[in-house]
Every structure is written in C-alpha cells, then in structure tokens.
Length: 239
Image (cartoon, rainbow, N blue to C red):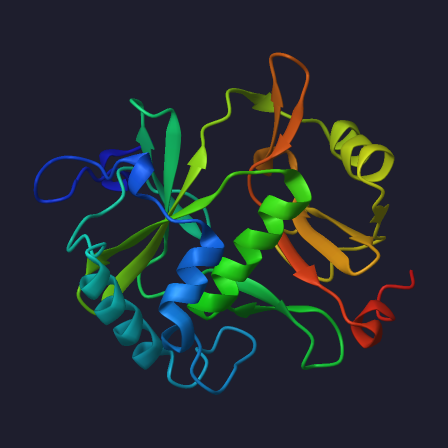
C-alpha cells in the first residue's frame, strides 16, 4: 500500500480513546436522539435533505458529551464505507465512516431493495442489527475528523484469522443461522457479495473480505449490511 493511502493522526493528547469510555450503540442512539435523524430521506448517491445539518447536530452533541475528537483521522484507508485505526493495546479496530458520511443502508422506496446513503441514526441502527445477528460487540466511540467533514467512530474486536471461503459463508448463514441465500444481491454491496434472508431480516455484502475464519475454525462476519424487513418488504425476496 502506498504512503498516500496511510495517515497517522491521533487525538491531540496522543492517546486513543479507552474502550471503557465507549458507549453501547443503543445508548448512543438514545443520547443523541433526534439530532441524528432530521426529516427527509434520499436514494441513490444523493445525500438526503438536511444531511449536513444532521452532522452539525451530531458534532454539537458529541462536543457536549466530551467525545468530539477534533481532527483525529484514521491511520489506514479502508474500503468503500470505513477507514481504520488498529488499537494494539486493546486488540480492537476503530472504524471511521468516510468524511461527512454515515456509510450506507438498504432502502425500499423504489419498490425494490437498493443501496442508499444512511443518516447517522440509520448507520448506528444497522450496527445494532449486525451485533444482534452475529453476536458481535461493536460499540460507539465518538465523532472525529475535520470540521465540515466529521466521521462517526465505532470500535470492534479485531479478529485474527484468514478470509473465509464462499462455502464457509454459506454454511454459516444457511446451516447455522437459518438464512436462505438469495439468487442475486440486488446490487447491494460489492458486485461479488452474497445476500441472505431470514424471517424479518436480510443481510447483504457478505464476501470473503468481510468474513474471517479464525484459527480455531469459527466463522466471524466483521462487516455486513443488514436490514429489518416489514411484511411488505419481505415479499420482495421470493426468489
């Protein structure tokens, strides 16, 4: 990886936030409340209305709570949604959303599932669902980045292992977790990723890069795009 893809800017005091300062995602959603979700939604690659105002409110609340890490940037460029800092002392990964973005969500406004920019509250709710489906332990750290380009920071246990195979991903989702593999992924996530559905939940963007096989043989998804389904939206997954 070239030097241009690396950054190393820590908080001003040079110390990474301690894990015991993190909040449960549900607590962060409750504390930030309405500041995370102004009226209006969007689709495609366009930002929802009041997206910038939503981030300003997020910044103000983080400052009030003492968890605004001004100009703190991630150490390593990641994928489409996150950049990263590895905290070796705690054995965790700090995940930063892209500047002034809250990653993506699955939207049904077009009459079929599609990828859309998420508001901060939708992003945190997505991580809550990921935790619930995969018994993960993602927690909320705070808000970082430059003014006007804030980033949401979460913490996730750093899993050691290698990329799982396609067969192992299917075995986990179908045989162990009771999902059904979809015939196509509706263009959600990376082109080669798989989608799965079960009862009132669909999970997208599962592929070897996002699923780790540990040395002890445990299959651990570390990134996914899950969504809760209503009776109406569940009917879209009949393939």
